[in-house]
Image (cartoon, rainbow, N blue to C red):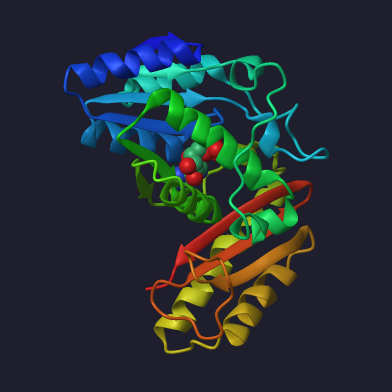
Length: 280
Ligand code: AMP
């Protein structure tokens, strides 16, 4: 596995692969890789001939009071995991490489970027859309792999890819969870033992809504109230949002139907966690 640091090397690698007739897969990450990321790399390795994994803690998607400087950075372990899952290249650029001369060009997906996490984290999706478009431009992938874990991000990136006619296929992979239900996240390491215990109420709330929906409850006020009740029981949890929305517009729906996205964000102590499901 090759480790490269510059956009020009990544482009060179990608063009070599293309010239050899290979299908190129790209897995963008912030690093601190876990089994969720591993599942994306594995899926890419299965469906593509050449796989690049990017590891870049992107400053523009973090707000001024967020965890950019203390975000976990575990580069050596990340390389081992990526290689074991079949990555051919790690792209690990510097901030200067991605934003040369304090770059002033950004990509903004209007409207969608202000919903769900975008409402609580102003500027977050502008940072995501900008860095992902830079990665697409540099790596020229055929397919890119994202987790359903960040469902609003998926909606923003699908829209960006369609609007800009980027011609990149976006593959969405299922949420990987710990056996007790907690969705894997690089931020889970911030949780104390007690917070981790209380954080389980996010996946519990999701399962509760799924069960109600399966039993015929579709009024979203009722479904949201049921989720709220579970989360409100935990003293360390502060709900950011509980929403039932159309996955492509991220706008609330009154009546849930199969395909409706249930998304939850909550602060558990000082750590903001998200989780979701697509009702079926
Ligand atoms: P991040 O490094 O947090 O930006 O995540 C990189 C990619 O991994 C994103 O597409 C995430 O949605 C995905 N991801 C993160 N956690 C999980 C998980 N528990 N299961 C599946 N995919 C995940």
